[in-house]
Length: 531
Image 1 (tube, rainbow, N blue to C red):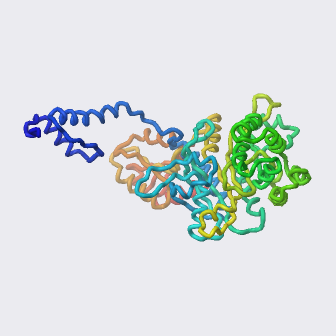
Image 2: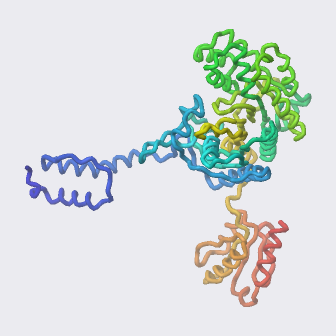
Image 3: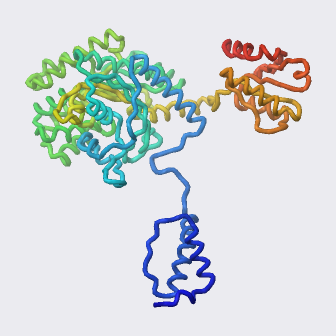
């Protein structure tokens, strides 16, 4: 056995240094010589420095940081969305960022491959949530709830190829609204579509575009939208029962319904020719079956198309499709009463690839104005989507008790990208704080007076700031207010202190007035209210 006592003093010092460091995960092997001990110590010392030199500081692919300016924009978007949800009577809900893996499997069809699985950390196999809908269904079943109207704002994660320009990320925020419970047909569904219209109108993203017909002043309208930075929107609706009935009468085997549905769902991204090729070459459909599907999925319109499909010789043979058409007809009656029927396009190419949808489905798609007026608008991406999922809660219930549900999801990231780009185009300045008053002084040794004064403002609920310096220059303080957009400045100095007054300065007009200290809070509140 080697004589460890003969090791060089420097080696012992290095070993002692390693023992005194915070514990790390290290693989220890038997040491057979002095040189191996020295080499192990040297390697452990060099490795952290080598790793540090190669470290690239960046966010993971498909994620991003949000600056203070971006957070202001994001919060305004979320405020519009959540205010609408609350206006319609929804309660707030939150669920864990990760779920048991078994809770998420077999709920998303082909999209299940996009779920992030977590490493086993203690006997539970976990996955990051893919959306907010499945956790909501799990919550309903776990708590044995029969009805609920809820909203949920939270992050979800998907292992897909990110497209930052279009607002597609691997980590992103969703805003969901759902109505769970047994109600008369199509009333909750119509409210969900009404909510989408209210939110998109409130965010002023652009006009709703009806695919089945064009306004005779379409080119003029497009030029106005382009000048305003607005984009046309298409709000589409369909029904899974109509799609399944269509697949059946076209000759698609039932085992291939969902796979065919996922191909149809790509029609907003690729041409019918490419979708047809995928269905034949990859999904194994006969060419004539794909052609029959093509006759239907390229149809879009309004309630007139619903009436037309009632008379279709093939589709009228499907009981399932007829049920879906009857519900869509009823839905359009309610949409007319809500005043939004003309904004909704019935589109058989809308498939929504997720497996849990069972009835009405809908999607709001943002379109990009083409270079030439006579060309069709190009699809930029979905900004809102949803539908009916009557069987999802029952999948978590041991006895299979079903709770019908319908809901919607707003795509915050894509909306944020559009609004942010529009603000850059028009050079809109963004305030990153909500400070209403700044406490300043023109003289030295007034920190204590400034601290007492700002405490009074804070206690009165006024948003106020000061510079964290003992003796700041007055010009520096005033420049800060102008740069940050702070509307009012309270100035305290020797003269003001002797006379028992304070100067209240308007940053915009630079006008100053002397106000008694006991009246300061009331005067500030009055000015803020008037502004």
